[in-house]
Length: 257
Image (cartoon, rainbow, N blue to C red; front, top):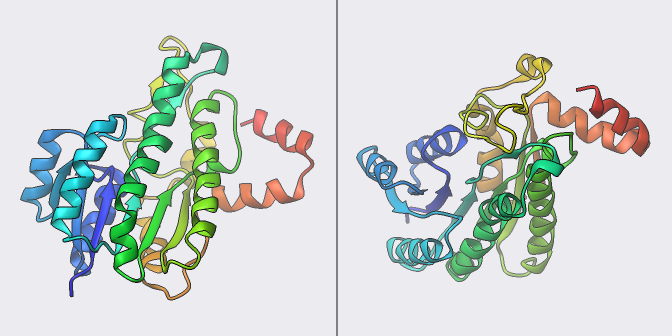
């Protein structure tokens, strides 16, 4: 029986690369997008497009209902990949901007996952994979709002994994560092006249979105998926430094980059 998987944020970048790859591997890919024109494009590419805006609770509810119909109540995989970045010094980020950051990156993900959870459990061996970030491990000046949402996603994923321990559903995190997608171009800047830019050194370690595919395959298809899948040297390095360096030394290092 063909396995169904939902991918949010599937219109470009990691989401589109993952959707295309899994379609070739024989999955029924349900591609969730927030723009109607992207849904049409997904359908033309051979996916099952679904309109779903993570920042809109009613849209998430409607999208989840359509997904449950398309997968006939049995869903193998959910790749929670949708999200965006709110950049700017915290003193320049408004409450409304912070709420939107969490609404898209965490609250919508939570709502969608809980709505689809019965179908994931019904499959007998469902997989939930959440796209975090190196900024779910460390925070840096100007990226505090985005990092906070990813820290929260990491904690949420840890709790969900333990709560679902006996259900047959496995929960994993993919933690990319710099990836060559449109993410940076789509960042919302709190200070348009002083945009937060990635350090020049990041370009030296940037990988294409295809770099996540081996991790995604393992998380979906291994009998023993890992809890976390770091991607790029930057994420591996920050994981190590966070363990080895005292807090103030890590602060000093991150202030330099």
